[in-house]
Figure 1: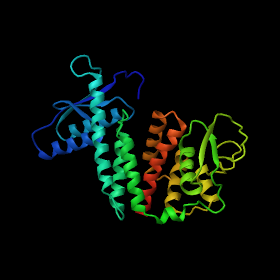
Figure 2 (figure 1 turned 180 degrees about the horizontal axis):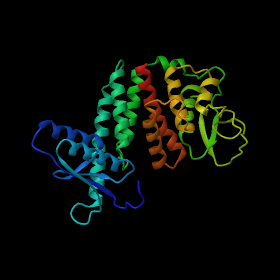
Figure 3 (figure 1 turned 90 degrees about the vertical axis):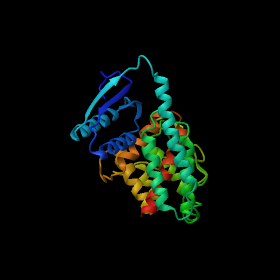
Figure 4 (figure 1 turned 30 degrees about the vertical axis):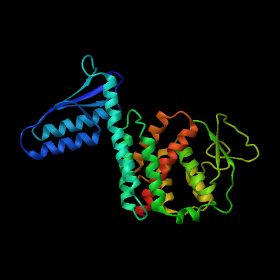
Length: 308
């Protein structure tokens, strides 16, 4: 997004022809998928963000191609509706989405793989439109995670309850502060499948000497870190013989995001990267980043398990 664009809001102003009837339905659905809200009749608003301008520009082009008229402009509100009111409207819209997801998740039981997959995708989509951190997001994430546990049942949990036989137990896992892609994913993998009683600590030191009961990951000279062209997540999968295909798939996504080499090129990778970037941008505390990242990877794992 150009630094010269200082307006906080984007407006889509459009006029549709009376026919064909389907055009109004098509445009309304597209606007809903973009997360825009109405300012007045035929005027819709999005916050100025990377990607939102392009979204409105593409929609304006579609409207023009179907015989309508559309203008996209940046706006600063001076009279009438205030910035605070628009902010509250966006939060309210996402709150409603999250409550709907949470309610649906409460109804998902054992055997509901398809329903869980749909809810997981819906949650990820809504999260990308949650520009102002609606409070209900946490409840929706917990509800979908709980649904994932019910769908998965006890088989996977019991098989991995104690972690691999040669895994460290109840250790403090130390990594670099400012956790992001590989460290967030690896921490989730450790606590979920390797060391269920793991604790995590964060250091700014480039060279860190572990104390008794500590093990390092994804940092210089760590016990578990990059090896060759493999990221730490992939190294952990190999070292602890975690052969679950769903975990291997997650490893491919983490590899491409972390190493930026597009080795695997999975379609889902860009979406996972966007959510992780959102977590990093809105969460400074490392422990909180791990918690939010764990919710993401729980949902992703459940979806992959159901599809595989």
